[in-house]
Image 1 (cartoon, rainbow, N blue to C red):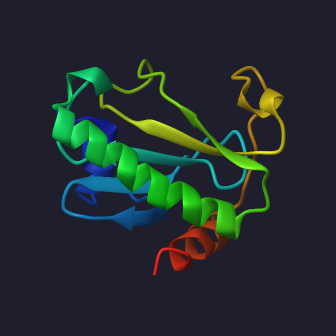
Image 2: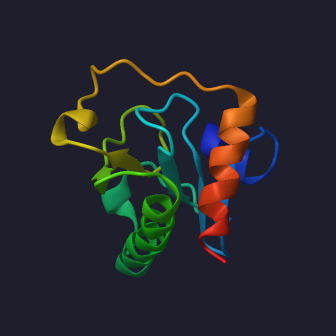
Length: 131
């Protein structure tokens, strides 16, 4: 059975897409820790990030770097934090989270509630920084 991320990549489940190439897909987290919280996933369905082969893992980091740069250009923040947990969905993924301070990476912080229009605007702003 395909993971929710594979179904998002296939277009079976809608998403707020930021970027895509032949190997990776980036989209807004629908339960964000901050405005602009983005997930980067490989199109190859692999549960654990460290099970990815070296080429795919290094490519994923480089793709994440491009997306993080676009996030920082589009969303006012001091840094873009990187988090890999890998427990919530059995599909390797990287969280890119706009930060004002270290405490913004605390998983027990309340999540940001956004409207569909806000998600669409944030996705558009970040994606426009990649072109």
